Length: 351
Image 1 (cartoon, rainbow, N blue to C red):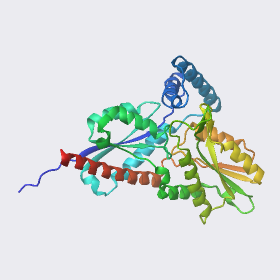
Image 2: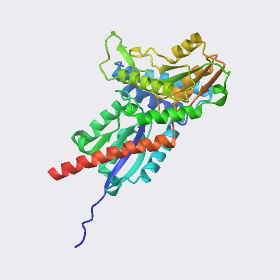
Image 3: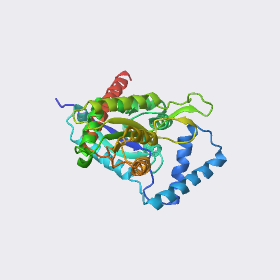
């Protein structure tokens, strides 16, 4: 008897983030800013179509001037590509049984710069049996993984339940908390930790979110406000309880926008001011609310830290292409592939 050969399914894993231009030119910034307005800003502020180009081009010009004067170049795309490669390596090293029935390709995509997520989804829908989509923001909201959800609905329609899985609730995973804490303590400079150097404060930086709209009402879209607060509480408690802890206090530092109404009040500026009032001597900043460094972390937040006036300051980069992080993410992806394969087997047995 000849054993029946089972064709392996082909799955695509898409590592997606917002995306920022790598080559700093106005020509590159303009389409990116316009997409941000249409995809994100339009959810909280109704921008007349005639003003979209004016506002986007004004923002592009402002970023171009600020970044050029300060010598800033975004590393977000290069980091996301490195993360994609690292996750692919961890998956290739896995001995999970799902790889007996599934071949996987890991690719990168972006909301605001090419290759655009909707284009990649369209391509993969015709080329593979399933997709695992990985939004590289730990806290989900309408402004992060919600963008991916809308694109999934547009591209996959009724097939989305049997063809695609979306990673979410990453912020709740205790294993991520452990990786974060180990990474943070391994990065703090010896000069800050040395006895007699003074009290140390920690600012955990995250993207802020809308609390009330312009009319003073709760936003009509899911903002992830409660999740943002819970994530901070979990991380603060874990850091303060760790035997390696050297911080006298840990504060949330939100990076807010100005449009749409009232945003989260626990800003980076308020955290730094509170540390001054508490007599904190040295401050460490860690952007735990971002998986990859970008203009909001290593440019805007870091600039606030640099000019804060403390005796010593240290910016700890985002988790970026950390190997433990990449392999944790690969394990989460593998679990989603197992679920997707089981769902497809069920559908196939019924039809």
